[in-house]
Amino acid sequence: MYGKYFVLFAILFTGWFLRKINFIDEKMDHSINKLIVYFAYPCLIVHNIGSLDTTEEVLLSFAVTFAVSLASFYLYGLICYGYAKLRKFPAEESNILEFAMVMPNDGFMGFPVALIFFGDMGLLLMLAHNAAMNFAMFTYGIKQLKRNYKDKRKATPRSLFKAFLKLMLNPNILALIIGFLLSIFGRAIPSAVDEYLTYLGNISTPMAMIFIGSNLVGYRFRDIIKSRVIIEASAVKLILLPLLTTLMVYFLPISSLMKSIIVLGSCFPVAATVAMLAEQEGQDPGPASKTLFLSTVLSIVTVPVSINVINMIFM
Image 1 (cartoon, rainbow, N blue to C red):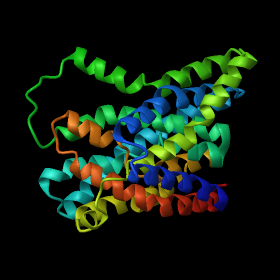
Image 2 (image 1 turned 60 degrees about the horizontal axis):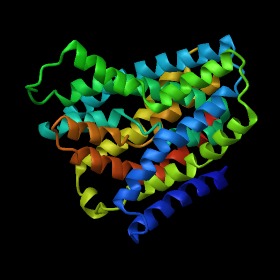
Image 3 (image 1 turned 180 degrees about the vertical axis):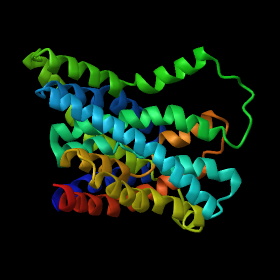
Image 4 (image 1 turned 60 degrees about the vertical axis):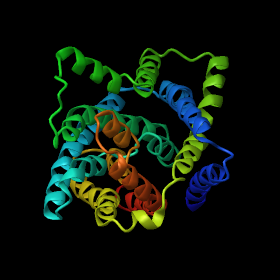
């Protein structure tokens, strides 16, 4: 198991090193992101989910994981709001930091980790967790970003519907639907197409880790660790919320794998989408970007420890 950790984070370090020596530039980084999101991950998902034997039990597991994960995200929002109030986070940063603490990187980091350590079914359940996160981002997240200022743009049913489609009908969700349909109707993927999907899907894990590592360049670590709120937000994200999630799911009458994936989903660092959405809504993305950086660096230690703890408790 430790060998798998080493490989993942060695690739992450490779991405950081290549960006540091300018072998990868910002334009290439953006292209890697698009390659992963629009091609590699969808191929990985269609291949793995399409190959599953989709029974009623599998569909029920997906639905239950989605429901419990969604409830967890709203609970995280309340916990983080209370924590920020208790610790007196600056008002101008509090809403973004709370949003950052709630939203994990359960896509770029979650998909490969779930697949490597928990197999195809683990990937399917992590997709359910990711779908729940997208829904929470559309409901809780957007409202959270607008909390500290009055948005002059009026939300219309049309604009809300467009935003919902943008978040929910992303390439991963579409690939999940295609994979489910293939599996449910027993349509075998032609061998040549399956081989194509396998080859492209196989690049997703190394490319995702290279992308994450590359995005760690450009931050001054010393400056970030001087901020009390950034350190505390990262600690809440990586330690407090996973512990509370473990307590929450421990007594639920669901399978060990579902419990493991829901807890694992809470263990990942801040999602990059938080900073992007903050910028789109006219907010300062700085606090989210700094928390993203610090939580990602710390996750090199916390994620392997979390997986060991999950295996000891649930598996």
